Length: 220
Length: 174
Image (cartoon, rainbow over all chains, first blue to last red; front, side, top):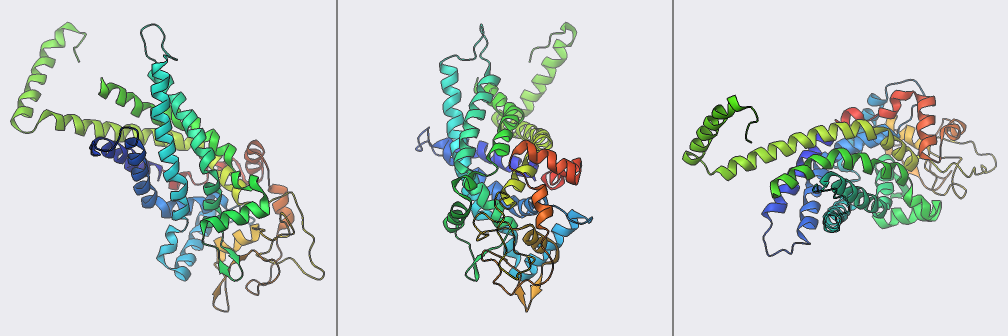
């Protein structure tokens, strides 16, 4: 899932970034490219994401195959609510990931240029672009994760549970978030922020290095 | 791309020449560069994604659990004469008005219950829906296993469900 998603995402980002009409201002180009690429990637893997979220949320009380249990749960969901329920939570995933990408890439490119301009990581004659890329990615990613966390909580809730009030399911994003806030406090909307934040650093270190490295080489 | 080994220089040059010739005959050289960069990016993205997934999956499991477990802080008292039922948590932030439960999870995942032709739903209003009957909520079990923090979560999942549970969801991720 991560593999096809990232291929779609990175190739999409790269293609869009270079092929966007020049009328679009330089500051907006990464924003638009990042958001569009993320939308494609998210929609493509949404059913798998549903499966994975349920698998991870499931904790077995009996000794049975969690894989099969979750699969059965999803197939009965599809039987009862139609094939579209495989994309359950897609809207919230987009609410989480599209702003994330936009904030992330904008912040990343901004910070990387700032770090470069101020020569924060320059030693001798070397530019230290790994440090620049990592620091920019890490700071930008942490900020983007914080901003989008309420959508992450809502997405997990929606993919795992059916939230019902007064006999019908709560489908509205704001209503769902409002219920979480009311019942669990404002902190409820930032549940799971710490593990999500901790993911940012290794992701930046491993994931963005080759790409930034390549960008650096290609631009020379 | 100049070779450091003197003996190989000529070979490299001749290969470069051949490449240049074929490029000029068939397609513009920029196309070749573009293709290589796309492939290179894909490969680095794939290997990067693989390593990242391996490293961060336990964090993902803890994150999803933190978000989907019911608040462990409050234990609502049951209304008189009510037995806890599947789908209704005995735990909830304010008397369980939005209690999402382990039992709901059980219902939703495993059996896809259907009572009187209606889909079983996890209700925000406790003890009122007729949709779910029977079965006692494993609330105590859930409380014991619930957690507040990331590190606590990693430890409890490893202890109660086995270390491999921390990498649950890795295979669909890959």
